[in-house]
Amino acid sequence: MTTAGTSASSESKLSGVVAGHSGASEAQTDAVERSEAKSSKAKAGIAGASDETAGVLTPSESELSEAGSVIASGAPVGTSAPSEAKTSEVVTTAGVLGPSDTKLSAAAGTSSHVRTVGVSVRFWNQDRSELEALSRSLAQLLAARTDVRLRFLPFHLPSDKVASQYVIDRLGGDHAGRVETARGVVHPQDMLAEVAGCDLLIGMRLHSLIYAASQYVPMVGISYDPKIDQFLHRLGMKAAASTASFDAGAFASEALRLLDGREQWAAEKRAAIEELKAQAQRPAQQIATFFQK
Image (cartoon, rainbow, N blue to C red):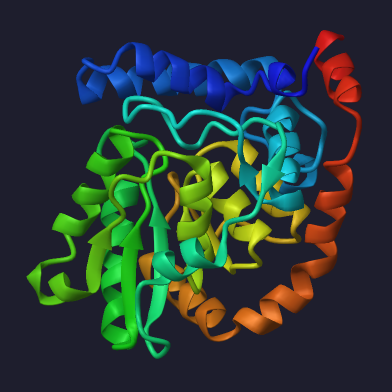
């Protein structure tokens, strides 16, 4: 059994469902994704998990082992780029390499005095309350710092592109010149390069946070599932907001704090990230054995 073949994560399953139903409505897609997430939580026995149980080994461990592989040495190579209907969030544990300097330069795409804040969002709440709150936070961030631009990074296409535009539309026209969406990014290597070009990453998608950690980019997490909390827990962090509770002002303050303290954050988290790298070196068979129990 290959390592890639053992990565039976809920996200990879979910991406297959969404890809196979690319013509479905947004409501249908939401229903499928929410059903998958609830099923995953039920099987893991972690619905409503507290901080004390966030680090416990669960079926979400398959995603976290993928996280270690990306953190260990970059984005996957040797695989064909997925179609737009598929997700660039699906990551195998095949051979990996980091992005080239050329890609990193292209991802930055701005002068040194401009700070790039990457934003990875998805739909979750039916009333979009979490995205409404996030848009208020981002508006505060842009108002507080004239040297900041937002670059939305849709990890799961096409739904995340629609979610990104939903937030952008609520920022208003005053910030139009400082807000953009990455386009044509369908391969994990290219998305890793995009994240590497950021000074801060605001993320709901697990792999956006994984990629940020791999490049020592400070992150502000938004939790919609215990797997987000579990990953952040491993870095000694907590989500700054969740889909159930979102304080726009506090979230913006945390983003500003991390934006101004990137080097300090990287120094503080280096040991935890290196530990994830070490864990990623476990033989693939150990991962396969766990999921066969």
